[in-house]
Length: 388
Image (cartoon, rainbow, N blue to C red; front, side):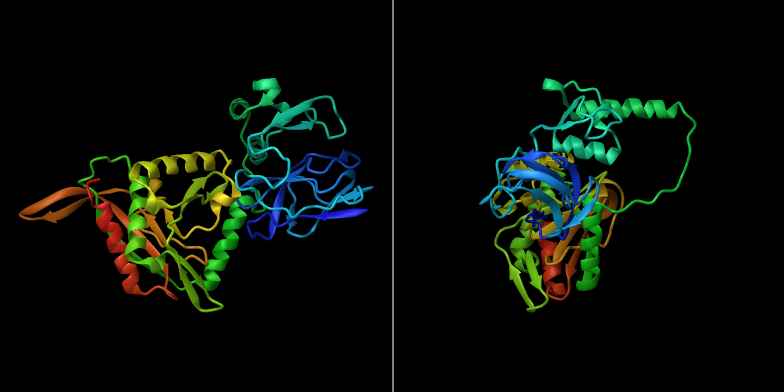
């Protein structure tokens, strides 16, 4: 009997949630065949089998949260010499190393509507992102009509099914009931990171406004914010980097890798736009569009959410003028942008109404001085107030 424990999937997280098993107890499997899909804080990761043999025991079911290093699978008759290679996150896909399908490949399950894995009368074909969304919505994929190639269930199929189910539900009397749910995925990660912030950071926030009345292109909002953040990092590098409380040392970074807080139905997901200081405004715009789409599709790779140097939160897209946004250690700063305002401002000889962006800069006062933070924010405002 050989035990395979849940590996460290490269995000430094203590646990992961089982999304779907690709095997059942009693099945035969070969090394590098699909074993299980798990969800870490923000991405679905497919784990390949490290051995060839018979699956004798699954230690968790779909929906269970498993600690890193805890038993995951028992193999009977594992082939001699079939030693698992270290599991690591691939550089190019949301998967682990091995001959595995990426997040865009179709994974098949044997199932029928209302059936179990032992009832093998049909096959379900769907990508991991569609499976994750169906799980979040509580939809049994066996009930969803497929219109994709070779019987694949697409995201559009899932939306249509969800829409028709919602209409059917409206035709029935509504009932209201309280429910409790365990935090999972992005919401669970948010709870853990905010607890770390509460326990470690000496928070301070500065507030100000940037006058953008002279902007020539009023649709470049996010790209302009990221460019201005890079300008702030150039003016005061101390806000672009990390603080180690144990060694009482800070590390400033030349690269400007900006994490963008993106609000989704599953919770806050924070993808990273890399090397912003080296990009033109057009390049930043394209990078932001690609990252947002990948985040909403849940196809963002784990490595695209790691090792950022500073964070931006555009909470004003929803509501709110000012806030006290919270950074996640070991980073030391986060810039929040509030809802665009039309403010009355004093000008030479009278008053005018100008468009302004409310700004909230939170920083870790353990390693960033008030003067450094103020100079950073001044540089951000100076860049934002340029016409283009």
